[in-house]
Image 1 (cartoon, rainbow, N blue to C red):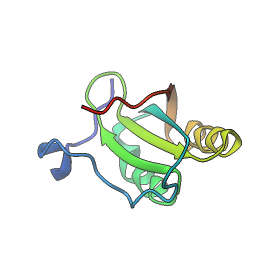
Image 2 (image 1 turned 180 degrees about the horizontal axis):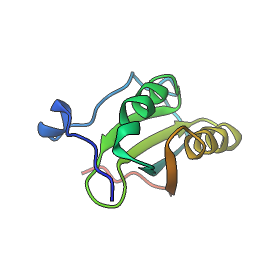
Image 3 (image 1 turned 135 degrees about the vertical axis):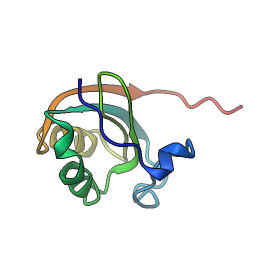
Length: 106
């Protein structure tokens, strides 16, 4: 099992926001859990993520996966392209994707 260092944002139990969602009003979203080959790839993976416009939230995790990402898009093809890019990103050896269907507001 790999585990990256905790960031200050995680210690505050808030997500690390990469940018305001570029896909405001996106109809499709998914979570993608990512396990890296080794924890030494964290900085490179995080740098790569900063250039991915459809990745709107990033969490570091404990357990089997190192990261959980929220990906949002307006169309299925763009969402599929974004998820495929994450799967093949440097250092990613395993991913698990869940499409999100309905947001429940409290």
